[in-house]
Picture (cartoon, rainbow over the protein chains, first blue to last red):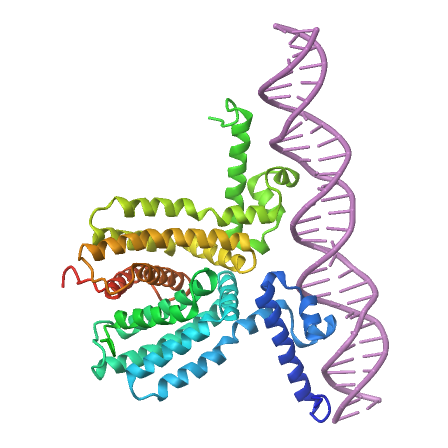
Length: 206
Length: 206
DNA sequence: GATGAATGAACGAATGTTCGTTCATGATTT
DNA sequence: AAATCATGAACGAACATTCGTTCATTCATC
């Protein structure tokens, strides 16, 4: 069961790196970037302070790598978007899944932290913008396809509509986590209805 | 010309307090809550470090008062909402004005900072929630009025619709400031159209 | 024995806060 | 009106911590 026995050294250090990164993620979401010290991270990872600097060149490097981390999860969502043939169904699934992802408390907290950092750190801003554009383009593609096949009126530019849909999802997620009195299921319902109204989709069952 | 001559002492200290608070606001939006030191604030305000603690009990007190600051600006917006008789017109004006407010770079930066703080500090969370609910209730009232007078279909619960409208405005504002490639006027247009689509309002001219 | 992972002590700078003190002002007494 | 006193604004040195980072050294693996 021990992971330290039969792996070559190069793999073991890679594993250590990932383990440290995970510990950093925990610390950052728990206390924020600037209220987390390098000692906190080292302790949480069960690693000496000096060794931490053997794996990461400094705190900023850690932050930047955390900021880039979300891309992996988005990748999965977007795959789902591309494979589904029915555009409307793909949209519905996407909204549900992206919203479910965004509504997680950890996600919200980390996203806010990344945004706060992106304001002042250009490299973090770059990652943030890249992730977001990646998503917007994929969604716009589906919306364009929906408009072409006539399942939704093409009153919008697909790119604009995609941005608006993402705005709603993210805003609703923030609100649900940050403000009391809003339950997750209610948010899902509201967002779905809002997106349909936004795109002029006729209600499936009424 | 000098403000220091004929004012009673109590007024002068009140003025000093506000001056310090303003300096703190500048520092906080420029560098963030936790990258701003009490020395930074004291220096920016032209006040000694010790004296800073005569006016504010500590850093957290400063942060909390900054977090509560936005309520004043919202007050003005809401006044506009209540006085306009035509609900649809009131809505249009409100969206434009709230969006214009939200799209300011300083506002976005400060809001993000406050959100990040609200996650961990219950008192900041309280202020944040209060401000937001205040706005939502006022907007819901207008939407209800619009539905009653028949100028917009009442397919939504007014409260839900109000939340959705605010989500869109705030999300779009974040996006415009944080992501490159989006211009402010384009955002205004997009948001207006999105809100109309959302509420099922027939376009005014088209 | 060579390479690099792992250690924790050490460093200097910076942090939030406290402290004793000075001094201008407004009230109280003479 | 003059003298006294009390209040609290203003100051900046000083405090104990904590910060990010570096370093010499030890240890394990190839």
